Image (cartoon, rainbow, N blue to C red):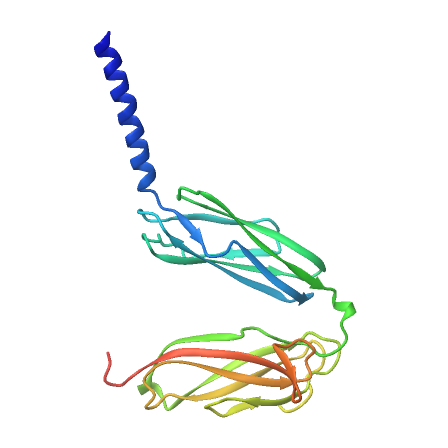
Length: 248
């Protein structure tokens, strides 16, 4: 009888140790932030949130899905496994068309981690469009990643930032400044719902290596990064890496 009891104790002890060991070798998904507060935006704008995370476990992390609570949201992520100490991000886009008022939406992230289900939150306030009077300059992208650019392909490249006037009045671009390169834009008012673009010619010859440049746009847009005596100020960026002729 004593032997049977001893064997039971040993079995339970071994089972506990095995369970703990299995738990220890699982991945763990650790987010830097689980809430994205986008503040105030105008109706019909898109809100973009990046939820960055680290696999703080000891086994590859696999994201099974990122499920949005409403159809006006989409999510995306790198589908490849994330190794221990590796990083990744869940990209979320929230469309505000016909959704004025307070927003508080969620994304449920499912994975093979110990904490297998994590809730991310997107919140803020959407201002109804009919309450806004004036020009509104909205860019399709405020940062463009050009990736690799080969010096042998030409002396310069042209980067175009497309935008739409989503406001109720003509949009007037007063000036465009770049710290390094010439810029181009059509110097006439853009009507409501009209589209346009701002181009910059970036010189690549003899400029091998990584770069990140900014363009500052001054206009009468009532939505901007900030305002000063020159008008509203919006900053957009582009980046890339120039590969030299001698590099393969």
